Amino acid sequence: MENTDENFDFSDSENDLFEEDNFSDLNILISQEANTSSPQNNTSSPQNNYASRRKRSAIWPHFDTNTNTHPGVPVCRQCDTVFSSTTGVSTLRRHLNSHNISAPARRQTTLPFSRIPRTDPYNEEEQKKRDKKLITWVIADQQPFTVVENQYFNDFIKFLDPRYITPTRQAAKKMIINEFENRRVKTGLEIIDSSVEKGIPYLKPELDVDTRCNSTYYMLQKMQKMETALRLLAADHPSIHALYPTINEQLSLKDVLTLLEPIEAATKLLSAISYPTISDIRLVFLSIQDFLDTYIEQDEFSQKMVAASIHQKIEEYWIIMNKSSVVSAVLDPRAKLKMFSKTEAIDAKKTVQEIMDQYVYKYQKTSISMNIKDNPIKTARKFFWNLRNK
Image (cartoon, rainbow, N blue to C red; front, side, top):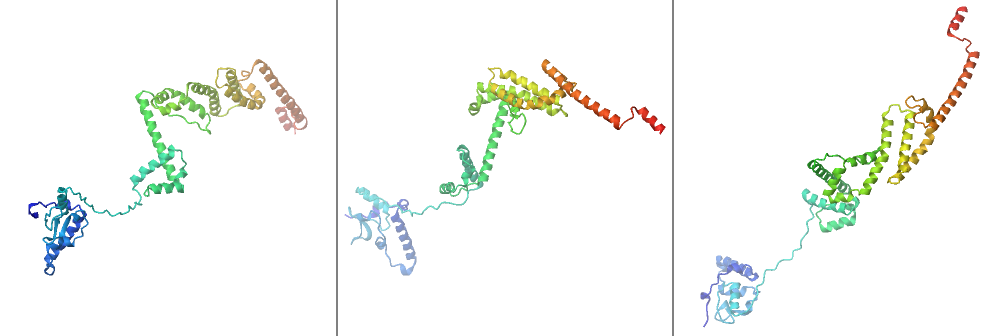
C-alpha cells in the first residue's frame, strides 16, 4: 500500500537553508512564483519541479522522481513512500535514516579568495609600540644605529609586517637616547624616594672629567660621602650590587683619595692667590714630595706605586724649580729659612751672599765710572753753588 506525505511533517526549512541543494530549490521556487504571476508562464505544473532541478545531493539515488503513478515527485525506492513536490532535502535525508541509509549533506563551497595583506602605515600609537620593541632589541643586542638602514634587515621587516615603517638611523638614535634619559630619571627618582624614606640626605654623584682639574678627587670624595646610601641601594637592587666595589677595591679608592688630597689643596692655594710667588710654589713642591715619600715607604699602602709615579714626575719639574726659587724663598719675609733644613739653609745663605757680592761689585764699578765722567757734582747742595757761581 502506497503512503502519501499527508502523514509526515515536512516543515524543516530552517535546516534546509544550510545545504547547497536547497539553495537551488529555493531559486526554483522563487522562479515558480514569478511564473505563476505571469499569465503566459502559468503552464508549468508542480509535478515538473524535481525534473528541472539539478540533483547534486547524495539522497537522490535513493528516490525516484519519474514514476508512472507519481511523476515529478520523489518516491522512496525502499518503501515506495510518496512525498510532496515541496519536500525539503533534509526531510528526505531523515527518511533515509529510518532505513539506516547515510546520505551526508554537501556544504556550500567556499570560494578560495586570496588574502591581500594591508600595506597602509600604522597610526601613530601602533607605530610607537613597534618602535619601542625595535629599540629594545637594538639596546639589548648592542646593535649599531645603522642596522635600521640595512637593506636586508628592512626586507625582513617588510616581509613580516608590511605596514611597519622602519625609523631612520637618526630617529633610532634619538629614541634610544630618550629611553635612556627616561630610565635614568626613573631610577634617580627611586633613589631619592628611597633616601628620603630611610632618612638619608640625597647627594648627586660627581663625574670624572678629563679636562677638569681634580675631577677624579671630587668624584671619589662624593662617593665616600654617599657610601651609606650606596650600600642600601646596592642591597635593594641586584644589578647595582653587581657593580658595587668590593672591600679591597674600596680600600684602594680610599688610598687614591689620600694621595690626591694635597694635589687638590695645592691647586686651590695657587689658584686663589692673585699674585702667587716663587716661594709659594717651592713650599707646595717640597710639601708634596715629603708627603709622597711617607707613603712610598709603607708596604701596606695599596697605592705606593702610584705615589712613586707622582713623586717621579714632580721630581722632574723640581730640578728646574729648585735653583731658581732659593733666593726668592730666602728673601720672602713669610718664609725666609723656614723651608730649608740646616744644611740647606747654609747653602741658601751662601748662594744669596754670592749674588749680593756680584751686584755690589757691579754697582760700585758703574757708580765710580759715572762720577768721574758724567757726574762731577758730589752733592745736591754743591750743584746749586755751582749754578750760582756761573
